[in-house]
Image (cartoon, rainbow, N blue to C red):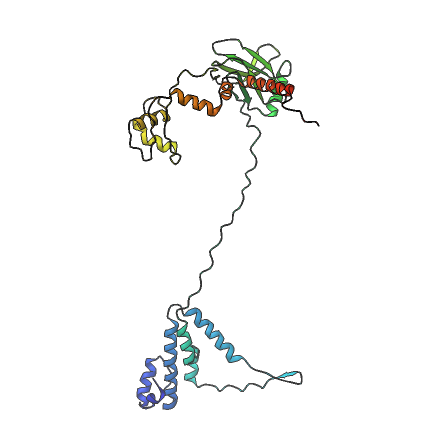
Length: 357
């Protein structure tokens, strides 16, 4: 309400308005002072309402600080290299009622209230998201051995076996210390034979060994140990049985084609046909049988009918080269000998010349 409107009222009416605004101790003021005090109280109330709006707190604090700095700022005059400033005039002491109201709320001009209203929707920006930092975890190196003492035996080809054992260097040294001759021994057995067909004395640094048995389609096993001082053989590790593959081409010339999609894991394929798999049937065989029967698979199936003809066999042999098919029938030892003899023949004929140096 403007001051002119307030002055049109009686002092009694102005005192009632002052009491409604929460002003106390104003009865001793005259009508003009009372109207000025009521006007300032109404302005403060409107500013306080703006302060209570969401998003204004940050802007209001900033504006109040700016106004405070402007109020105490002085512009000194510089003369002859010295800075002089006029002494500040003593401020007039407000009356009791005005002092009480000033302590309750700071004075804010209408221009300041307008600026506060312009910034009432300002919000504090969100902090930037923290970036994920990769921390390399040092898990260390794998041990050279686990020291389980186990012996493993596998078939490399129809005529060769490969053995390796999980013993630490200290375990091997302790075993050699208890042996009568200070050496470890690898014994190879053929199935249904009580006596070993080979007994190999190992070097101190040996952790594996290739064994030439020369028998295809034969089951073997092995023992790792040493001969004791009092007699008898002490077994450190016993391998499982392994069978060397056949040295002949399989008489089964049946050709079957099956579609195995790369995008389907074997576990999903197995779950898809689990109820239709026969006992002991392999996954590829089951897929072939179901594809031939027209099973509704969720992928495209390329079904090939008819037997594997002689023309198809000849074409495959031509693509792979008959020499490769012939060498497949040989063991790795024979392949090495064949390569050595072939190289000697080419060197003797002058087709290949050895490099000097």
